[in-house]
Length: 425
Length: 89
Image 1 (cartoon, each protein chain N blue to C red):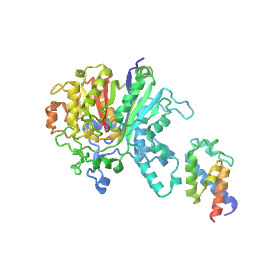
Image 2: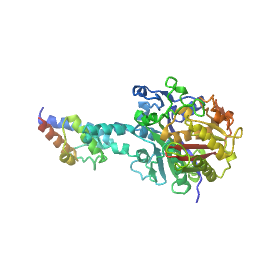
Image 3: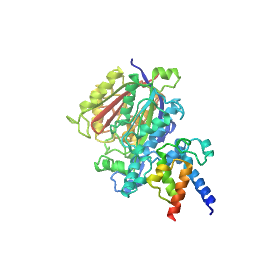
Image 4: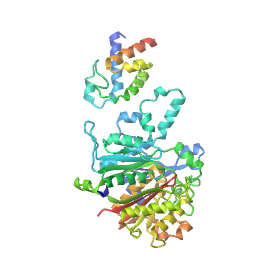
């Protein structure tokens, strides 16, 4: 039996907005979440700007007990739990009480790139000082790869699959793809799909060393992330979490849940680090196949895609991504769909990117708007010769009538993910 | 301080340490000598490690592994804390 999969809940902790209302407002206003980061300057980073969600203590206290906060050091797990709990509540669902049975029909696939650098550093220092016995009981749960899903599974009382996936910068989209497949196959009624990542110099140093981060906008953080621009010169690191409640249509209708959108197609693959593909660069054939595969699952024709939320990181990879979309959809110039780059506002949230950006996509589809792609007045000439620059909105577009929006995410390891979302009518 | 006052002081401090680890406030109200941390207070057994660290900090003592394993009730905890404080003197 093949089940249709719809989205009934959303939650987000993004650099430019915490919670759906703030995030939607920021997208419509084209507000950046990127700011100067003093610590990066002190540590001689080339890139000294970043997109980090700012959580107030009063807000954090609404989500965690004093005991949990006594031990919780991982910013990624904190972001993930807040987004996940918000999405669950937004879907009209309640966490199972301590004395209740778990919800056997609900699970989570909640990915991360590296959920908690803070507890790793803490443990590293304590161990080196010979204080292992003073570490306490909560280091393992915060440093194991599956920390985010383990925390959320416990908070919500989930009894179906509870796991964490990791595929670099495609992690968030991949979590949604896997949750989609699980529900479609009838193995779960509901899956909380999402991802999170922690922040700070120890996470970003390796990228700075690779010289893939923007280095020439430290004095102008709002201009640093410029996907598809001729002057794009590297991505801006970010952090946060996004979460979506995926549910089979029957269950959503039977409990009268609000439906944001339907997921009609998903595909994941790898370019195998062959041909032009490497650890860090995609094999174009892999990307195009991934888009084709997602379209095939969805049953829609490439000409039905109204808009694309790109991976588009503000690097040289943007030109290649546009070229891949043009080839995969067999559409160019004025017949190319609208396209925007969420990273122009929030930077590249790494493992959290795909899920935050899918929350953005679903809100745009549901609320009929399309956010501006910031800092792209000077469209890269190699992009402008393939697609009509008017397809890249400089201002927010209201009253859109988009039916289908595609999302792509790519990651180190030459991994790809493509998702197809359809408006719920 | 008399022996009785010392005992009361340890008991009160211990109660403050344990409180955050207990979900049910009612059982905390009924805390008595025989109260078992896991069976009666439903404390997650992994957290016993954290409680011992908190005790070490508050009372400025060190609790060896052998003693730690015995600290499963209020009575035993108070006895061991008392013993370690005396040793320290």
